[in-house]
Image 1 (cartoon, helix red, strand yellow):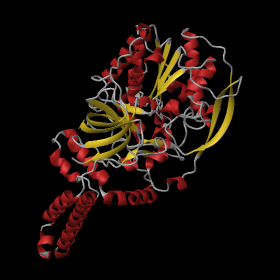
Image 2 (cartoon, each protein chain N blue to C red; image 1 turned 45 degrees about the horizontal axis):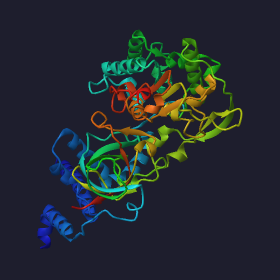
Image 3 (cartoon, one colour; image 1 turned 135 degrees about the vertical axis):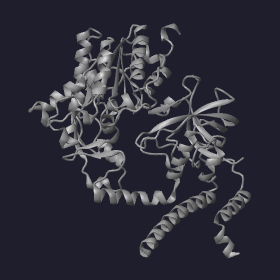
Image 4 (cartoon, rainbow over the protein chains, first blue to last red; image 1 turned 90 degrees about the horizontal axis):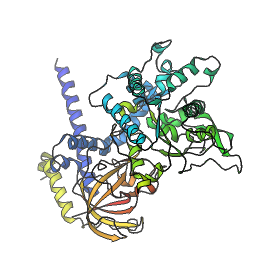
Length: 384
Length: 157
């Protein structure tokens, strides 16, 4: 009994000392660097929820002890528990998933998330504003990787028949019932996966959150066919050719994990890309701001297009299918609201447009940066 | 004396704080970087930080904050009293903020606090200098130019 008490007191003293040493070292180091110590923020800022949360984050981020220990702890957790950290989820057979993609499917919908009404209202409002200018809207929700490959996340999902993203499907159904044109990549990618021939070529990268070249080309072809079928545009006359490029790419999920030395554990994925070149001069595809089609979207448009090798992403391949250059705004992680704010700042990009294609990743329905705000269109360039 | 020092550590830290505060030279924020980078250079007071920064370590973005201009050192501002400035990844100290994507930003500022004074080298408009997510919570109330912070140093009062 006496021994237990001694152990308890020793542990209590040890942890108290740890807290004190950390706080004292942070305080002293900030003073020596001529900075106001973070601890004073708690009295110099009004005690609002935002300020207190920022204070807590600042304390955590600026702690010298935390910064020194974090890489070591991450390494130990990875080597002993295979834990890749808060942002990455390790699946089966080497597949890696982004935490937010998984949370989107597994967490109960919280009141603070962008609510269904907000999403639907924002998209309908954008369609109405475009329609008033004679511009059509085509929606391209990009499925999250675990929606298409849940069996690579957990064995329990093997053979699942029912859709695992009922909330996404509910929103898309609501939008379609309001007359919004949506590209259903969920069905397309799932049927590809279930096709024994095509299943050898996954539509998503193994280590990355994004689609593979195969998935991206399927999406671009599907969008091009829908635009032609709807009569919203016609094929142009520019001839493009494809150049195959093979490259090694370390997936973004691994980069997010921040485990020291992770690059030496996982080999980069060999990725096949298809760069689009002008047939006439073999120069890589380039946007034309005066095009009658504007593409808005997030990192699903950025991959291969602005990343290595360049001109090999969704926009280039859609342009290749339609035989004409397009205009685009690519806003990493900002397809719910930020990309439309960017469009507002660039009124000339709407000049002469007949169609706007709006791509966003499925998880943004709940976790979109800055939610789903109602953003006006910029002043009509014709009226300026 | 030694006993008292160990008995009252918090008092010792406060004493150290006042000592260092009194002996430190006032910092005008001037250095070769802030005076040569960007096309505009100002000293301005951070009026407010509009809400929380984005709590996603995987997301690189610019966050727009409102400043009251105290002095224009170089270049010309579109608005002379208040300016709106986008800072890249504002949770990070300025000397650790540049990365493969944005390699030309920096400074000596460690963290953003409303009411602090900063000396900044700026560019304009932000869209010409930063191709990523711009979190602008003044979107509804302000439609003028947003500046891009290239270099940010703290200024002591």
